[in-house]
Image (cartoon, rainbow, N blue to C red; front, side, top):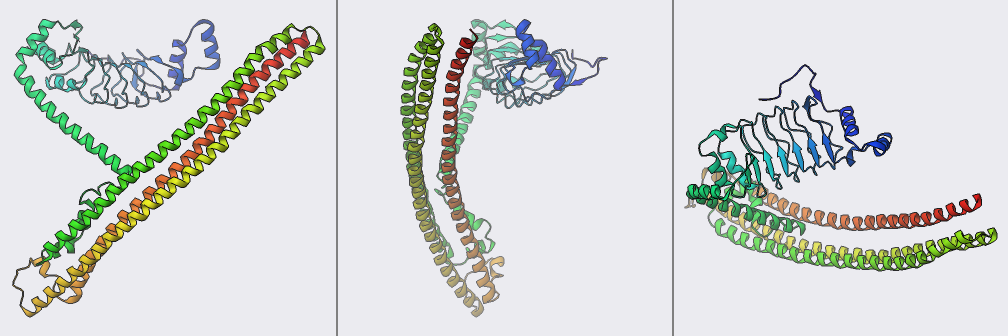
Length: 523
């Protein structure tokens, strides 16, 4: 049975609906009245109930960024959408709707309990992101294929599953199959799975489960290998030397080099090309290894800098705390002395003395902050000089190695041109013993044609080398500039935050004194 459109007009979520729901479900009595007067911010709402609203489409929930629980059951929703901003959602109820496909849940990585009971779903999929899923209710749908159970094996925390009311639940081997393939399941269709049932299921499906586990292990090993490769690649990218530990750059020079690939078939060129490739790849490997070593130096320099900064900030904060603690010890005594004093002249004197203490504390705290700013400025400037020097040295050495790649290319170009000219002379004299492919022979109509072909190949290769060098230099300089800029901005924000913190504390102390002074005047 599914939800049908009734006489009430289908609704789309809007601001008015959400405000009304939040208001009705908010705090009651005096707290509720205050909340309604001041308004409840959607971002502060943790739980929201929108059941029986005749909602057709989910919308306007992006402001509920901290929502933990969302109830959308008993509506006429046809598609799961508009939930991408609810990344903290733990509990979601979409039961008793008209949903045909599971979708739109990719960002809900914290979801633990999902109910899609009584919809029109025929396939269990698109739940991969829900790694914390513990409870899944899919009863009263149209699921009929047992392979849907195998899909659920990826959810290691799944303990409660409901599939009753689906065609799959009518199959003879249904319970045994589920228990065998989901051995960690505790509840199936609202009944606890006993140990005897698990043992029977494991025995009955042992052979097929062994095969399945073997396939899963192979797939997992492949995924682990791909993940390790990706992590390694990210490490290489961080050093700006990705793919330089392989023939990638050399192969890319010939990937679009039509003429060069034709010329590779010339007698004697194959050996020449292999020697060129071996030397070229060796230089690329030198750049790669050098880049990784330099990246470690950069990291060490940055770690050392961060440690120095944190030590300076912590030491400065400790000094500030000691001064504040000393002030607050005197603070209570001063306030009590003012309250206990009956003579107005003495009160004024004590208030003036206490006000001077507050001013002195402000000056001390601000002096400490200025000392820290100067200390950190010196540390930052020193780090900036060091990291810029390291990066400049890296770029200089890489450019030197890249120049060696160009020298190899120039040498190869000269040798290839020499072989090509000699081949042309043999063809013109009828002395060439080897048969050439037709597309290659077409280049040897005259000297200009073959010189242009060799030159075009040479230009492509140099362009590839130049582009890779430019890419490395540009990315390295951009990284360095961004790092230094971020450090300066972070220090500026830290300083502003600290000054604001000091000012607020001093203002609080002064306000407390002012209120005491006013009460004494009134008395």
